[in-house]
Length: 640
Image (cartoon, rainbow, N blue to C red; front, side):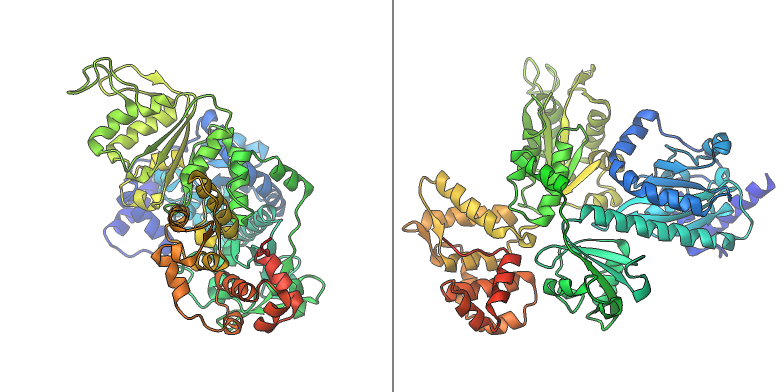
């Protein structure tokens, strides 16, 4: 008891601004526990184990990561065998979805919360290895009285974050002891081991997800490059970054001379932004060359040893893609980011897991939601609601319906709401970030309980719906600002799908030709693009994405005199790319700053030479083989 009182006094001293010998990461967590999470150090709370039904949901959502991480967990457990350590793999919500521990101590471990299904979020448990790691994204040791809650002060917990290929925190690997030596430095080796294991799990995850793309692995030492690399990134056919490990993102930032804490994500950026290399240099970095000769240089002047691994599509992967449902498969023409998203969407379509679609305005979120519904085999209707378009005073009755006489102007027999109308089918909530805060708790009940109560009603009505939501807002930011419920966010974000911006897609011309064909057919006429009009559309940045492109094609089809769309038929923003004098083609080709410009320069040379490869090669100052290779890489095909 005296120890508990001393611990509470120390926390109170920190809260009043007093100095502390604790690590700053511990002090900041204590402050969050009181200021943000409203926890009371004088009220200890027992460890919490989620119910079995919730645990199944968490494990199903983490099934792929559990499978990839399991080997790493078992290897780490062998390394610490006989030292009474417990290994926990927690998801991004702090729930333990896998663990390894000594069977002799299972009762003690369960009581302490070092068990399958235990929730270690900072908001519930206070300062702890898993929860504080989730908040900060940093590896750490929370040792004994570092813990906020006196219930957990006997424990020593060392945790490291595991990030997915998009740079989002996916899980936390934790290694804990029921009892440990007093000095915190006794856990330094544990911190090293858990950090190394998390790094290897991230590498394995990236290799599993990106095996059909180029993967570039890095090390500062040639001896470890091929056996235990420090970091890795994946690149698409145009040289853009598709995914990274956490270490890969940090290395790219360092190589590019930027601060990783304030710089944008490297996903979608050309590799040439960070390293003095292009996609064409990758074959020279494979194992066919001595390790010490595989050097790449950063824009900042730093040097790294690199190992390039060629794309290795498997028969199983190809078979799955071929069997992908048609509504989803027709959403792209082979863009790598879209293809990865489509595989994920196809797997999720026949489940009841809520899906949150991220993407810029106009990037095709509703098309994706409709395609998922069409592949779901659900017999009910697809009901789409734009939460930003319904007036705030009407949105409650529109969504939940109302009983007879519920309010002035209510229908005499009452009316079924849009949510109930989607019973047996799919409910798509577009711009969910604009839903009024008071209604968010009612929507949470619908998702959690699968039932709703109409306005003016008292009896709940059961509904069977698949929920898909979308927003161009950063919902995590809205949660932080108190404008969106955190519990609703986690319910909606059970599975996330991200649509790339149109300017980032490598299948732009496939989409362009498809839209021209579709919009011309709707207009009842034939239409095709002239080379000059095509080039102008390729050069535009498309801030409005697919919606902006479709509007531009509609205008061009309407204004064109014959069946050939000319630059004069395009919107004024596209004419800006045809009216200015472009620099000489060879000059553009020699100082290409991005894959888009490289593609435009090559297309310009091909169009101006009448698609004569020899002439285009002469104008670019390269040989014919290089032109053919670049055409294949940038997916340019000569018109029929």
